[in-house]
Length: 110
Image (cartoon, rainbow, N blue to C red; front, side, top):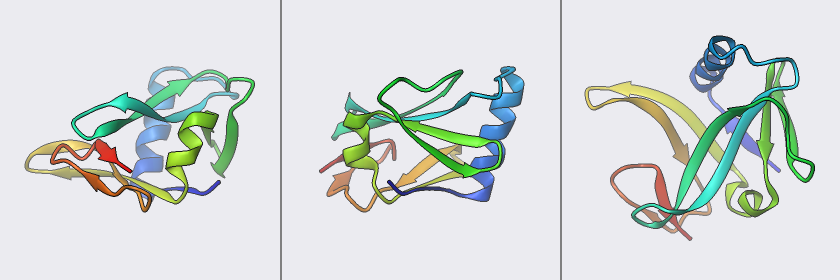
């Protein structure tokens, strides 16, 4: 499985992990959930440990990513960035498997 995080996204994730006192086994859960304007939405969460059936990606020293089997089928090749603009700041997703999306940027369809 291939997921990419920009340097800015990695920096933000590391900051969130430090802020929440995440331990050595902690990581970023990247998930796809039913819902959103287009049918699926992305979810991000800092978790202390992976689930038993998670795929674990060690992207950089200190940054692990946990992906459950359902989400993995929709996340291959996803690029995650963290952007700041006049409308606010947050994580963005560039998903080659998405057939469409909506204006919010966190919802997609396949």
